[in-house]
Length: 240
Image 1 (tube, rainbow, N blue to C red):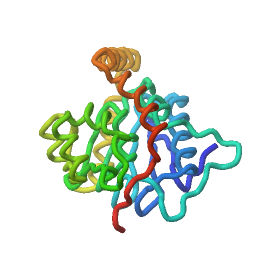
Image 2: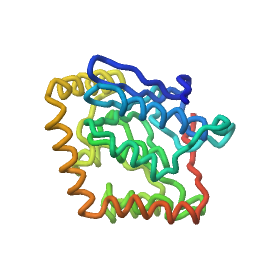
Image 3: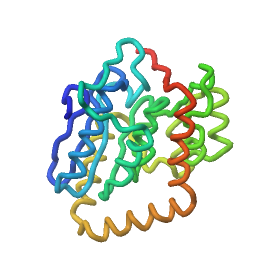
């Protein structure tokens, strides 16, 4: 079950393209997650060789929809956040997230599991939930991807973590001047990867992911379930 007005999936040759299209802020709710997870399932099932995830509008994702959240359609199954992460992470094709503007709160859960992250030069990541009285929801995942000191600085202060800083740390692969260049170059790079034999790509991805799991990533994602059972799920929207 999917809603193309929220998340679209299309093929571009051997590249599967998932597009968040709930402008202007691509906020999420139950209906969005059903469409998002459906698009990723289509990308997994399709015979494309690379998957790109991008978003329309000024911001990649501003977190949860707080004004008019729509529930999941009746009868639809919505994966828990940790299972949604696994859905993306276990897609055995190279995956690339293209991020512009803000990626806030739980929006980062869509980006973390991807193999590569390309951003616009003005992109940033942020988690303001501690200032809302909700601590610890995603802090362990921030710690994994940003390092403990930078993660604490972001969480404690609610500051914006610029993509340029993450690029210098090696957590963002490439920077582009604007969204048009970001999208075009990301798909172009994905098409280059897609020319390679998919078997060694799967083997390389599996080897890298196993290495990260040995280092504790699998355990970190699994512990997320414990924290989300104890805290409400909320994200702060970006101003329009």
